[in-house]
Length: 171
Image 1 (cartoon, rainbow, N blue to C red):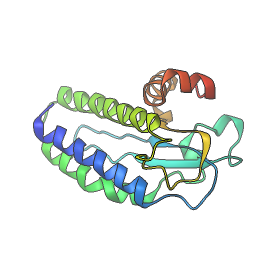
Image 2 (cartoon, rainbow, N blue to C red):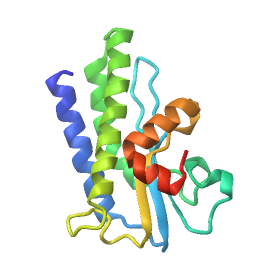
Image 3 (spheres, rainbow, N blue to C red):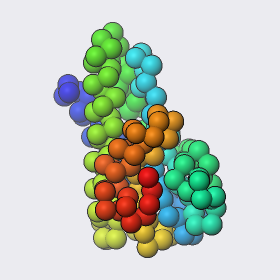
């Protein structure tokens, strides 16, 4: 990955953490939050949506489906990330389809690693979720439900960890 693109993703990480710290939801009992609707048309990389849900606000088949959550698109996260995604799209202008496909894979890997790191630190003082009212089994993950079950399952396991996925019966 090009240095400018890696730098843009480092900025995205900082923006995500700052936004999580600055904008805790007003709702109590948040059991999950996550990213979904990753978009790429080989001329632009869209800003993924960030969503969260609270206990009691789902049917069994929508518990892990961000488009059905109480907040399916959190505006402050989109606003925070959009400038970085515009920069990435500009850096990718004129690149081959193979380069775009590599970028999409890099982005999934980036978000999965970030979510796993945030899950591992969610109960520490350094957690960006320390001001959030979360449940005991709270997780953040990549819930890309529109891309099919196989990719959804893979991204969930990579972003929340296999043991958390199994204990929460996400997939």
